Amino acid sequence: MPARNAVLAASRMVVASHPAVSAVGDRVLADGGNAVDATLAMAALCWLTLPGQCGAGGDAFAVVREPDGTVWTVGGSGFGPDGGDPAFYAEHGLPSRGALSVAVPGALGALTALHERGASLPLRRLWLPAITFAERGTPCSAKTRQDVLEHEALLRADPGLAAMFLRGGSVPAIGTRLTFPDLAASLRALAADPGSFYTGAIAERAVTALRRAGAPFSGDEWTEGASPLTGPAITGAYGGLTVHQTPLPTPGWMMLQQAALCDGVLASLPALGAEAVHRLAAAARRAFHDRFTHCGADDAWRDLLEPAAVKAARADLAAGVLAPPAGARPDGDTTSTVAVDAEGRAVSFIHSLAFTFGAGITVPGTGIVLNNRFGRGAYLLPGHPNEARPRRRPLHTLNAWLATDTYGRLRFVGNTPGGDGQVQWNVQVLSHLADHGLDPQQAVSAPRFTVYPGSDADALGAEAELRCEDRLGPDVLAGLTERGHRVRALGPWEAGGSALVVGLDHDRGVLSGGADPRQDGVVLGE
Image (cartoon, rainbow, N blue to C red; front, side):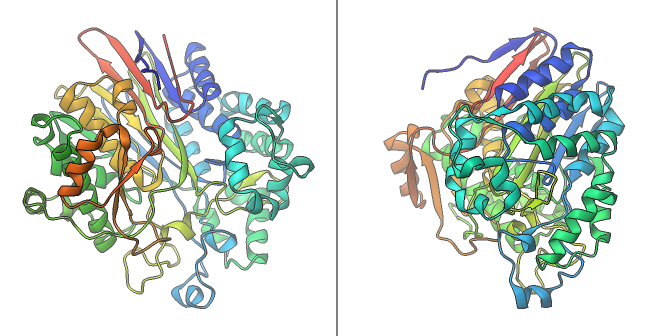
């Protein structure tokens, strides 16, 4: 694949994994909106252009830096059903698809909080491009066609999904205009009153349909979804930077833990050499082991980042000790955006349905696809901090980050989709930027590797692998095998993800952006 150059700009920048999404974000900034406005517009358009990855029935998280240096976060992630106690799941199981896999969607609550705190433009205006796309038709991309092909049976089983993606009973060709009239009507209603998703007609339809399908929702937990998790970011140090991450239920702390285990080590090693990859992979394995062993969405994690714990873990890594695998595949379908405006406000935003097309069911008559976050994230392990229980959010894969320098100035903003790959790839990108001076495009294009399994619920006990793009080279792959890894070579660009980064050079007054060539990402700036 030909090398890409980083995109440069003097005042503002947006990055997304679909060209139309980047375009709408850039247009909002050009018309006087701020980075939060751009994020809100891009989020809704993602629901049309990347419909397998995200939607109003999914979850969303963001980390925001204000021009005055304040950093805050929003987390939109809901509970499973109130009637879903361990006895219920012991009898019925917890599948990865269908009504029993659904958690209350948090995306609308998170977007509402973003709008109320940080936006300058009305939601109706910001969502008009998405509504127009839904009404007039969105060209089917290669990504969406492939998603439909791979999940055709799932889509055929739900009338709402079949109507949207299998019109005439066939898989759409690339370029076919997909229209979403029911979703357009829903977005118009939600733009006027986003809270109606949790207390109005859409909420009533959703809860009724789920209850009929056997999911024991009371409706009260659905109403609670309107109240997102808000508060300060959690922070850690790396390479002279302060890294700001989203708190629980996200795995943001895992990025901070891996960074702490690698800080001061990788800068002196050859970039992407066997020893550097080994260190990063061993840190990731340790983080997933610790997560599985100790953590739930409402459980303490700070002990793992205490200096004594980090020192002990670093000693294990230096001695070549590899933690045992935790137990899940690093898959998932997600998409993300980054926006930086001329005032220095920045937003890293990420949203998802969990697996591709989520639970595989829609809220009847609305065009809204529901997530399968509860089936994906909660465990059926008695007494575990992440055991499936009422009013307990399941562990999440989504996370978003930004980094500031020693003066408190914004230095980098980034994220990546990719299930349990996210916290690994974010650390890899951070190392490329901070340790080796790569520009954002070089950092997101670099060869990627993934510790398998992570700690999702659907494949506990899988055999440990280190999945590496073969661009790392045969000598590196052999060196990793010698260091105790079971290496699985992938194609040169097949590790997954769609990493996005914007960097700021304060000496030159320049923004630099990179979009992952593994998907259709585009950087736009001025």
